[in-house]
Image (tube, rainbow, N blue to C red):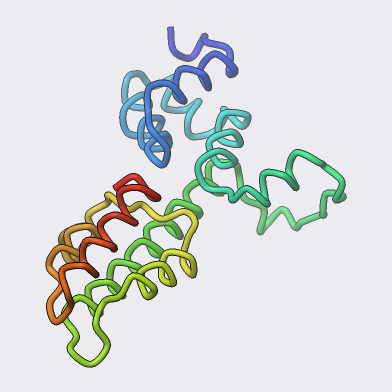
Length: 174
């Protein structure tokens, strides 16, 4: 039943069923394991679905505008270094995880440093520098989320902690 669905309908289902940054996981690790034919379709096909997931989840607003205008000519690439749409999503997802880890590490260092403590300006700088696509609610390898690290901050006033928490919740949906 799943492999017989048209790609636009499958794309609508995936966008409804999974939140941002979780759609590739739904395709590969949930739906891809339902049957062999759909696994091969996920692995080798569904180019329009992978393009939509990449554009909606991992591209910035500027890149979306460029993709919508289609004013730039397509570049030729060697067959050896060409990547599929699925490979583009995988590479973007790994970059997203890396950026999230960097922001988390910066906030952790500032939260426990007496010489350079956490401030709202530093938090905004890190999110602006490594964003806009950062998984605020994602736990990283060293444990905790960015919000938890702000709550654990030492050597700062409570007003700074509350400001950081407000910024994460109101602006980034933590």
